[in-house]
Image 1 (cartoon, one colour):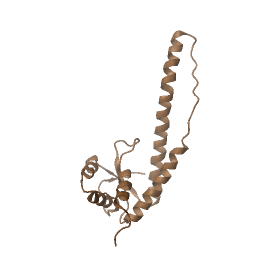
Image 2: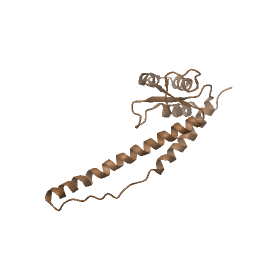
Image 3: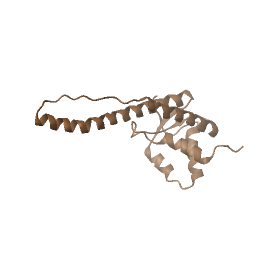
Image 4: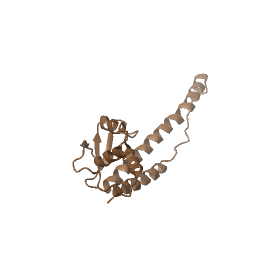
Length: 157
C-alpha cells in the first residue's frame, strides 16, 4: 500500500528535526521510533511543530531598562554606549530563552509520542544533503526515523 504522505512533507518534517538548533549548534540529531509509519511520523512532527511555534510566543519583552550615571561627560558617554548595547544584549537573551523553550517543547512532545533523540555526526547529515535524488533522500531520512537499530548515540532528554 502506498503512503498518502507526499515526499516533500516527509523531507521537510525530517529535515527540520535533523538540523541543529541555535542552542545546540554542535549537535545534529533526529527523532527515532522503531517501526513508525510515514503517515504517523509526519502527523507527530506536525503536531509538535505547531506546539513549538506557539511556545516561542510566551517569551515576552522585558524592560524598560534604567541606567543611573553621574552627571559628567564620561557618564553621558557611558549612557550613550549603554543605550546602544543594552537592547542588543536583551534581544539576544530573549532569543536564547525562546530557543530553549522551543527546544524543550519539541523534545517533550516527541518523547511523549514515543520518540528518542539520536545524535549523529554532521558527516551523515552532509552525506544525505548531497544526495541528488529527492525520493532517495526522503527514503534515507525516513529509514533513520523508523529504524529498529538507530544510527548514532541516544541523547538524554
